[in-house]
View 1 (cartoon, rainbow, N blue to C red):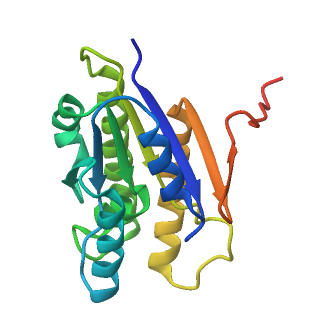
View 2 (tube, rainbow, N blue to C red):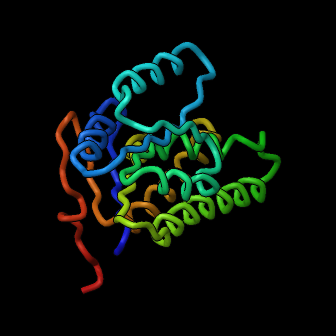
Length: 195
């Protein structure tokens, strides 16, 4: 039995979270929701409230802004279908949790730590052994389609986020992209450059 990983990407307000939630609800078993957002201001509090209203009592809710790898076994023990919303906020939290960068080596070390944490979560999903197959759905923002940001921190974040998305997408059994409320299966359309 192989636990499944599903990757759902798209732009801001594209409908990717709604698609991912609908996909999760279509699957059998207890649903779990790992929320990575943190409410630092009124706008973020409002966004979190809207997501919570959409989830209602159907989901087991887990607020995990940083070390998902430490909690994923517990979540998988309690739930068959887990939605992580979202990789973008989680990566932001990991990027900023240790304060400002003093050097390029700080940036490189933070990126290594983030990628190791993401890989640890993927490895633990794959290695988890339960009575039934588990499905974990990751929601993320596709942020690399615009201009290069003028702000240094934004450039650092964009580059790391791109690598996180590539890592999870490569591991995923299914991958979808939502654009203006319409979703396409990008794994089905993937082109190999290996002959």
